[in-house]
Length: 325
Image (cartoon, rainbow, N blue to C red):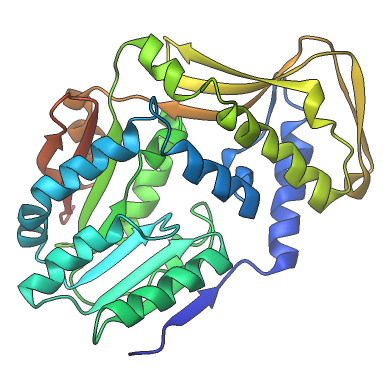
């Protein structure tokens, strides 16, 4: 076994500064807003894992269906010897790709990129043990700031699975994709998952389960702020809501205050008022039309080689290649 190497660009001071900046800015907006990346402490990650197994939450199953069906073609067409995974988490689905590349005899290196050091280290160690001769070079970082720390070298296939790209609205998505493309060299490929536009009732059901797991996940962002910034949010005084925005074609998750209330955020010296019925947006999840995916990628120098969907047309995987511009 080759011992994994982990580069951590998120020391506790950096994380606290970033959270303070996002909270102080977001709670002064109208409407108030918090970035979804702060859902994912240990409890948030556990809740999201439960969400992926809910009957109405289809994206994980549909994406896995496509991967299992097309992975040999993906491995061959990518020509990759290195896998770079953005938002790697537990790297469960990654093994499908790694197995296919290992079968070609080309697999040399895996680069997981995630904002949770503990999760990344556990996954890196497990994969280094599972694949003989695999070099694992993990990067603990934030998509917004640390893409330039992704190791260079080899023929790389970037993975961004799970529809994570949907968390960016159009202007921010273009900015992110351009930054990502700029870390790639000609010949590198990108395998990206896209949740496709469909009946709004199915979309809302996927984000508002009757068991209340998504509601607990949504409220968890308040628990993170309470813990890290000495705040006194009362989680039970905020209700989870999921809506479909027809203009931006996205699901929005909100927390709605059930009463007039004041919240103190000790480390920021802030007092924030919420009116009864006031809503705070915590996540967007854009839904895509297949015909628009290729042009979005092409605009930043990525040429789509193939787009696959599951049998029901719920989800898509795109393989695009970086070209010289």
